[in-house]
Amino acid sequence: MTEAKKTRKPGRPKLPRGESKGKFLRVRVTSEELRGFEKAAKQGGKSVSEWSRGILNATIGD
Image 1 (cartoon, rainbow, N blue to C red):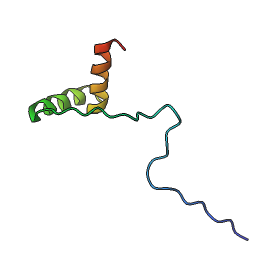
Image 2 (cartoon, rainbow, N blue to C red; image 1 turned 180 degrees about the vertical axis):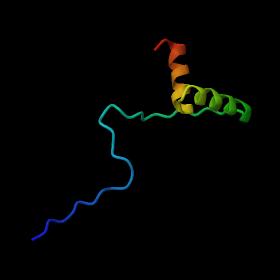
Image 3 (tube, one colour; image 1 turned 135 degrees about the horizontal axis):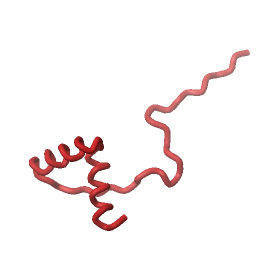
Image 4 (tube, helix red, strand yellow; image 1 turned 90 degrees about the vertical axis):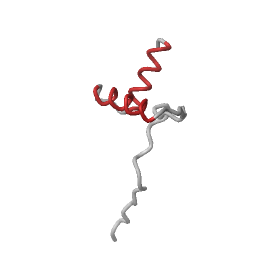
């Protein structure tokens, strides 16, 4: 008798409780601003989301 293989769901596995970022902050920017943000993020080796989160957290002293 053979065991049935468990099928994997598509996509990445769920993160453990408390590790996901479940809220969104939507901000409208100009094309020029976005290019500047992308350039700054790339220079820091980060995504635009990581870069902007770091800037915002630094502003509030977190």
